[in-house]
Length: 197
Image (cartoon, rainbow, N blue to C red; front, side, top):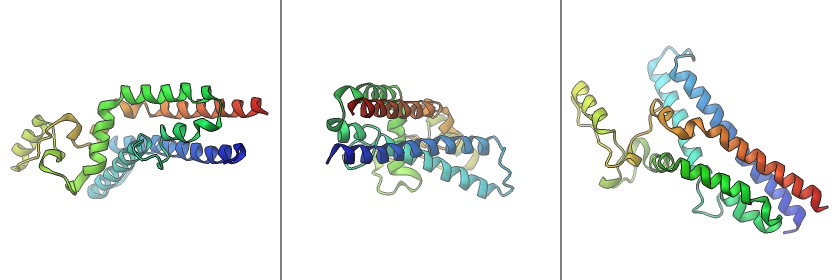
């Protein structure tokens, strides 16, 4: 791959990451307005389904942004692995450190997001040990109110992420930081390209 081809491909992949982060941020805002009752939908079932769909969108895309197991996936970490040989070595160092710091800060949330991403709603393919559930106090209250036997999460990472509980997760408030991290990388790469000429 020539330097020109590498830069063009890098721009495309960075733009895709920026779009995903922007859409996640806007979806969080839309979900917040829905939860606060600021979006007028009179049918409760429709409103509940919209909230579930928005929650799944946020969870699935946050999971994808931090998926670095498959090198073919365009994720926050993989973009550095794919292009570090085409730019000066220091271009990605701050970016990689920022992404890793973000990941470490939100590790519990990301584990929970990953479990909800893979096992959400219908528990498709979930083993007994991996089934999502509620915190014990919530399950107990639901059993009392509904007369059911609610699933209890065996660990914090296996707790359901509902539209309301999503806003209890610190990672949700920090999504704008991801936008800033990507913006800083874009600026650094542009400068590296300019000064390379």
